[in-house]
Image (cartoon, helix red, strand yellow):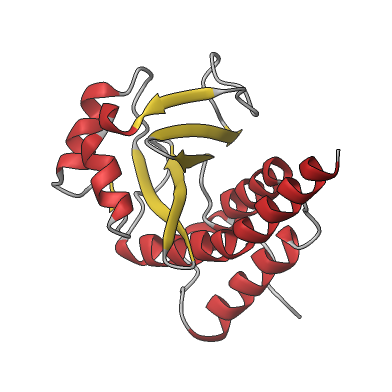
Length: 192
């Protein structure tokens, strides 16, 4: 059977994130990202699948490399100055200290939260602020590898705490693949 995208607008945002439905969604992401053996294609495949699952207008995957954020993939409705695959787009973790602290402590956030990370994002974001957004850590083996950031437009419902919980699970599915993919890429690079 498996998960299928909702067929009408009402079902698109109200799917019930528990029980067998949640298991089907997670299985859908596992299957969607299974073929990818390179970090960029893995991130792209995951971002596309999560955008569909979460009924988001856009998804962005950012890695944490040492003491820097590194934008890896942007999909969906992105700003005119953004590209799907940014090249060497690094910025220091301390440029967004509240976000770094929140993510590195394995916690996510919603745009409706009254948290420093939300205030920081709104104050520093160089583009138009999405009507609703959330960020969750991408975690594997107890380590935070980055952030999955999702947005919705003003005509779409705000993300809820249930959405945040599901996004955390989906980011963990992605995270579980990252160490192996990085190891494979390092092995291939070492063979050259």
